[in-house]
Amino acid sequence: MSSTWKSLTILAIASSLAFAGGDSDVLNYVKKKLSRNPQVKINHLAVEDKLPIPGIKGWSAYVIGLDVNLTRGKQTRRVRFEDILFVSKNLITSELVDRKTGRDVRSMIQPKMPKDIYSSEHLIYGKPNAKHKIVVFSDPLCPFCRMSVPDILKAAKEHPDDIALYYYHLPLTSIHPASETLVRVMEVARKEGRNDIVEKMYTIDIDPHLSDEKKILKIVAEKTGYKVTPQQIHAPWIDKKLGKDRITARKLLVTGTPTVFADGKKDITREKYKSFISKKK
Image 1 (cartoon, rainbow, N blue to C red):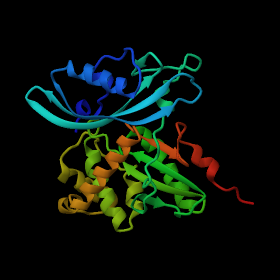
Image 2 (tube, one colour; image 1 turned 90 degrees about the horizontal axis):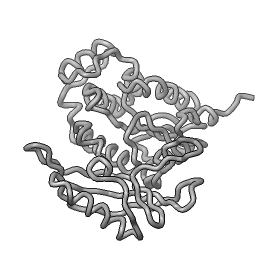
Image 3 (tube, rainbow, N blue to C red; image 1 turned 90 degrees about the vertical axis):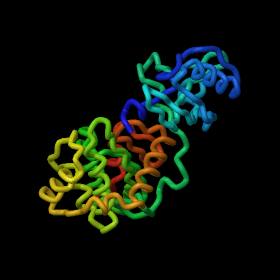
Image 4 (tube, rainbow, N blue to C red; image 1 turned 45 degrees about the vertical axis):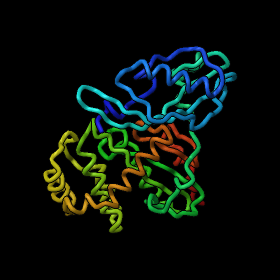
């Protein structure tokens, strides 16, 4: 899905400020605003969660789940996404900034972690009963991921009693299409116990804009010695796994990479894991 379709927010398809009351008023507000856009047809709309905002009194963060048909030109797609609205007694807005810190309040909001977030199929390094748990949403061709994720992988690999690392794919295919093929290769490798190939995807020299699957697989084979076929990377179980990863990212309002959660809390520094490593006596 292109970034045009993926990076949807209520703000992107409706105006952002109005008077509001209770939960029903919030939903009616969204329905009213979206109904003004002839390109949008609402299939389902719901308040998924209602969260307090740390340090900010009088406001709540509403996580709104939307299922819409969005038409652009001759193309219509069904799109599901979550977005946040900030609601006070009399106001509702899509953007809220802390005047003291200048911090976007959206970055402070974290929906509840799904019960199955620490699933065995996502555990890449560390022991399930490790003292601390790290969850990473990443794209192997994201420059920022390449700066931090390899170090997190290394830490969990070398300190399995301290850190259990759960890895989720979030390929930003609109920015670097080659990521889609690479994450599929990573899944085949992980099933074969080749986590070393996962690590190599963060150092492989490849044009991120390359979309020719066969060329990408050839480069992977040349650079890493790991050969897989198009049939292998398009196995139904991989499609299902990547789909579930996208849904989990959506539920946690993860839109960028790398996004890191340390012991259930969003880690904007991406370095909290360093404090989890036991010091040698």
